[in-house]
Length: 626
Image (cartoon, rainbow, N blue to C red; front, top):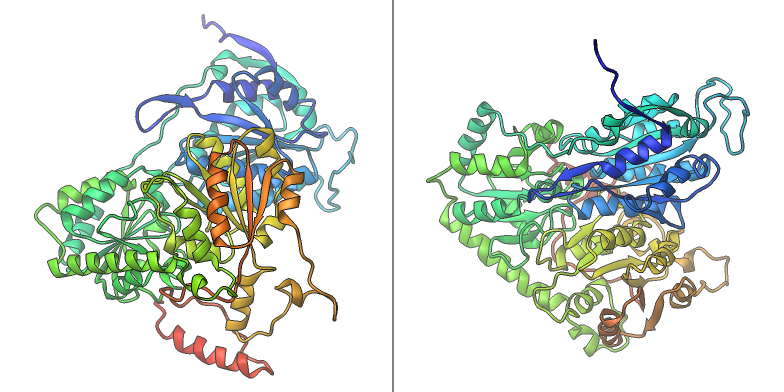
């Protein structure tokens, strides 16, 4: 006679929270850590009575953190996972209605960037007894639709828990997706507010889940042979490294691979910091935001080994940059591995590199190619020092600084030449300048959200990074446009005593997009603040330092780069969030590097500037790989 498994009477929310608080993950070094580091929550009707009560009971094992904006707290949770190389996560819970839909942009950001986050929005009543409840969407054609259905296209896994016992299968499925190296991304469990509070007999085994770990799939033998054969035929190979190198923690293998085989390395936004900035074979950033050293090698390479990158258009110059090279896609995700019709090598980055290492013993890239890469890399490193100096500002005191000069001052303010600062950014001109000019000494010290390039991610993302890496100085670099879109987590960082250094570059509008507008033949329109005000009305001057002080931070306006250097020294010595504001210009950018990026130009326009831009566009498209 079978004995019935022991159970415990719990609400659905209690079972969910207890499972999360007990779940551990085996880290890359073999240690065990809680898989979920905490839950960001803004309570409202739809989650305060159900999951709110469950979180309170487990607060010692699973911390609950209050934020000020739902989208921002999801950004923080996503940044935490990125800073932890996807090994650990945070969850996010909201009320129904706007609390839930505020998470949709963050879900899309996580989806694009292949980053895990557990979204737990409240939902309307499963019983429908009080319909329509406050904030409930009423769809006249679909009785079962709620606003949470908006999560379906922007998550890797979606489920609506209609009965409490459904959590027994739904939550493990969600965790399986978040820990799957190929399908990793955001998951959403929509929680009707009545079902959260309903009790059931929960198996005690669910409350003591097995330790989870990340699989490291090896390459198929035939794919490995094909990739190795193609590399052996190469004289001018190039490695393009993406975020998958960091998530696989393959940086040691990457360095060894480059050194033994003499293959130069170029970095995408996601892969930057995989190899130390001063390594002789690190030739710099690739693509639209890339260094001339890296882009020149990309045009000359005969085989490109693309590792852990989804080959976004900023990396490939809209498929024009290394259009003559043969591609090998080493990627755990088969879709990414097969892009550009190249040779697929579906495997974990660390394992795949190790397998290739064994298969290629005795082979090396052409010695002249390796030496050329080292020379160009060194020339670029010296050029970066020049670009980020204040030489030009010292000659002409009337000039406003631009991003490169600010980056140099911030970067070099570290008392150590081997700085372990983490720089955080997402949108505007800064990503281009930072990818070229920031010097990352260690893995993960460059934190750029450039898959979605979401304005407003920066400060919230910085908070998530600080929670993940409390021992490091986290420096958020943000333009005035992004600051104005989302700044509330300054107050959260102060409340949680998570110190950030936030450097605000105020160029009085959306300078990056105005440059794109003008390059596309457009008129100055609706981007800079002085183009957006009624006629004869001066553009507003926003006191960002005063605003940041009102949120609890220490803040100062600095008049020039010299004052910024002094302020950075003080900010490093401080114990709570510091905000430094400096006026910059958007009319100067780093001219070195870059490549074509496809932005469609109108085929019909009254403007001669648009016609010229169209001619340039059509000419450039002829170099595009199809």
